[in-house]
Length: 144
Image (cartoon, rainbow, N blue to C red; front, side, top):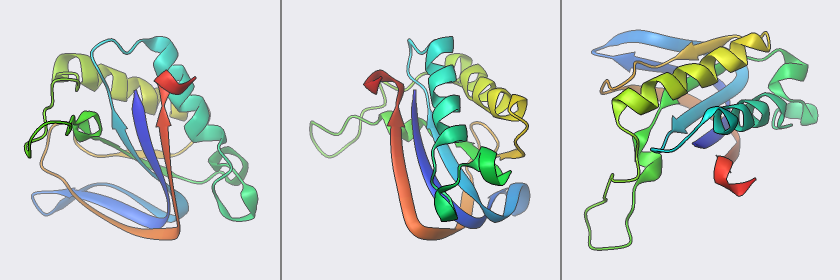
């Protein structure tokens, strides 16, 4: 499982001009991608990193600051661009695998008491955010 975590000062995701998820103030924008063999331990690792990484001002985590998170599914995190000019999506899990895994990440973060907004799985989404810093971190559960 992969996540790209960005520190933001407000973010929102819209689908067909309607806001489906938004956070205000300092928090995190998290793009999540899943691959075919991701398992509960991959989810747990990513949840722990998102909740505990000290990325906010004053070296605080979202748990420390009780800051909000916007989670958006992003299959393109598993793009393979080694050959040619067209990315391959072979390593990205299909909806039947990926959607429950992304939901497990959201549930895991909420179980920590965090406020979590989401995008809409599989939709053509528009993301607006105010990157802060900028701070962008890549997390891959295979790197444990």
